[in-house]
Structures are given as structure tokens and as C-alpha cells.
Length: 219
Image (cartoon, rainbow, N blue to C red; front, side):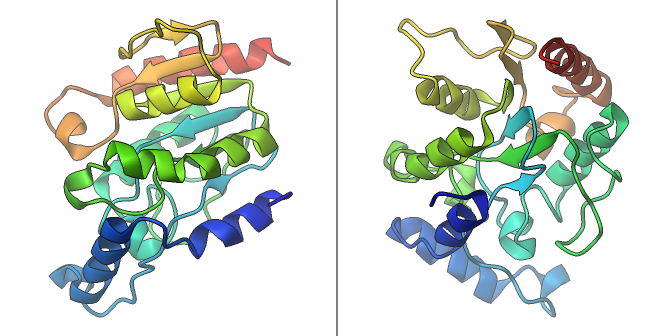
């Protein structure tokens, strides 16, 4: 796993978490009615983006009928629609839509990853599953060497602090929080947040404004 491409090949063949393997494959077999004619990815999802990115965006885990279906982070569901539209407005994404792995979308200066690579039941991985998957995120971040991290939610925030071996007591997650000009917090782009108004496009744009300033400071 000395290269990003080698690491990604390793990730997509992982079967270390029995509960997650069973769930991702069940979802890929049963499918959602709207996608019954599609072939689901049904495997762990690798990171996606610019290998030279200074910004790494950390989510939670693949969506059952989003990334678990399409094979690309935040692709094919409402969370991805919100995220990539925001990244496009901020200048990191080539287009605001993300529908499939071959839709032409590219990221410049940003890379998207997650602490857990398989879709978990109820979108809730266990602490043990997060720990089992942690070496993949660790190696990925070692290879990328980002200067700024955007944490989408508390689990992503904790994963970043763990990777950086941040001293305890560790800063708590909060939307808009900034730590050491390196870590920025944002509510997760899940429908639970975006459809209730907890996270609005304007709020996301404000966070991305902070992120862009921090990235620019490293130039």
C-alpha cells in the first residue's frame, strides 16, 4: 500500500467486518425499487478526488443506495447532491451533480474520504468497525499529506483528531469550529440535516469560505 492506487485496490476487497459485509451485499441484492435494474457496487468505497489535494473532506460512511450503489463517495443520493453543489460553488468540483462514477465529475484541490468504507445499517457504524477501518484512513492521509481537514460531523471530527494524535482533552465538534487553522467542523450533509434546515446551503458556503481561506494561507 505504498501508493494511493494500491491502497484503493486493497480497500475495495476488504471483508474484515462481517456485519458490514452482510449488509452492503444484502442492499446490493435486494436493491431499492427505483434502482432495481442497476448493478450495485456492493463493496467498500475508496476515497475520491485530487491526489495532490491540500483539502481532505472526511464524511462518515457510504450511503446504502448512494455510494454503495455507485461506488463513489457521496454519489447518487441527496447527500451527494448537496455536497457537490456546494463544492462546485466553492470552486473545488467541476460540476454540481454527482450521479455515477463515469459522469465526468472531477475535484481540484480536494479529496473526499470516510472513516468507514462500507454502508452500515441505519448509517451507524460501531466503534469496533470504525477501529477496524482506521488503518485505511490513516494510510490514505499519510499519502495525501493534507494541510486542511473538513470534518462532516462528529465521527469524522473524532477520526481526524485520532489520526493527528491530538492531545487530550480534545476539542469538541461544533459546526463552524476551527482548530489550529487545520481542522474545520461542519454538520454532516445528510438529509436529516439538510432537509430540516439544520444545515443550509448558506451555512455550508460560509464553512467553505473558511476552508478556502485556510487553504490559501498554506500557499
